[in-house]
Length: 442
Ligand code: DOR
Image 1 (tube, helix red, strand yellow):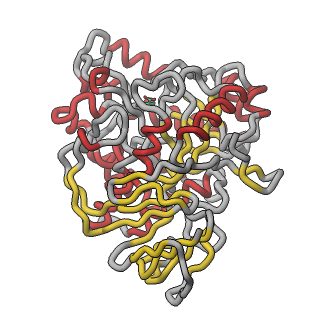
Image 2: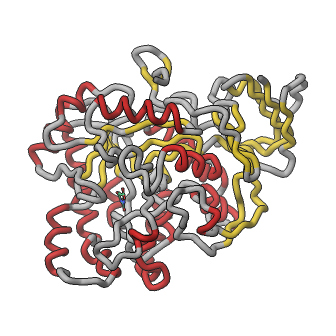
Image 3: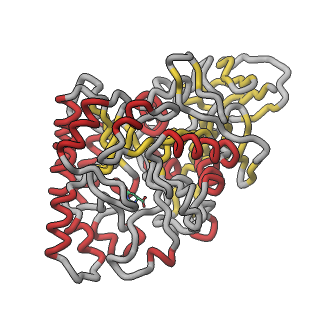
């Protein structure tokens, strides 16, 4: 099966060319403005931009066990619509993904349900170092240094030292200091004011935990990725030229701040909490300066019914995978960054951080995970049009300019202008260096 995408503006991302891209089977086989072949599908790309599919390295898709909020099928539809062709999912499902058995069964679920490519982290507990040491078919280890949704937590120094010392898989962490959160929660005991969420999970909680995790990573020379950086004050801690430390920012921390509680209430209740307006601009600056390399969503759906409970019963988390690329393309439209930077942050960097070979770039030999976007298309985000099972978005009512229009996963066109082709499934996106290939799907 050959697909020719003709005359598009192709973001590689180190350069941008007006050219044509030929897909054969699952791979990109040629990039040349003069390609002349009899293709099964010819796509006219004039006036549109072709990007590598987004690699979202932090999502919570709730499957198994919490599927009233989301499942791997609904979440993967949201991904396909949003231009996300690969996701890496977090272990706070039910059961938690803390053993090889739980990982293997999640992978089997995804093989049957996911329209896009997938990988699953293994979660750390205070006593599963043996499982972490021997884990296969996973991009890495997720540590909740501070608690969030679910019961995963490793905050004792001895347990953290063991994980960083004895395991070899790359690690990432939710960095909010549990002791600080608990002390603040006591000070605000009895509150029902949602704005107190950012006082309980305050700047100090984030800074202390990020400093602690980076210290562990450096002392043990352990590859480490700081998830969802939420404060400007953390960003100088991320300076590292050896490639040992990488970091990520999420759209909600770039676009929302405490002033938004008045308008959006618990819709923007997140862990780490949203912070001050200055943090928004400092996180942007850290992206532009390269201190933060990745943009990921932390897509964390809860039903509106759950969210509408009074604080602090309302759970933290918001859905984002189907709007994250559009949110960033809208920033390109506003002149805040370039389309090459968006591709760098959302496609290339996460693939390099998690060693996802052959993805995140448009190059001959790379996987044909692609998204065609229309930088001139303006659409309003609406709750009722969301593919995520929870059917709401914190960006409801906002008009964005720059939207995905067609998405290919391994050469298969899974999404085209509102329609899905569900005849194929995505594939496991964790590379096995020992065998020189991706792990076979179950
Ligand atoms: O707000 C959050 N919700 N932050 C997380 O880290 C977890 C997530 C969830 O799973 O609901």
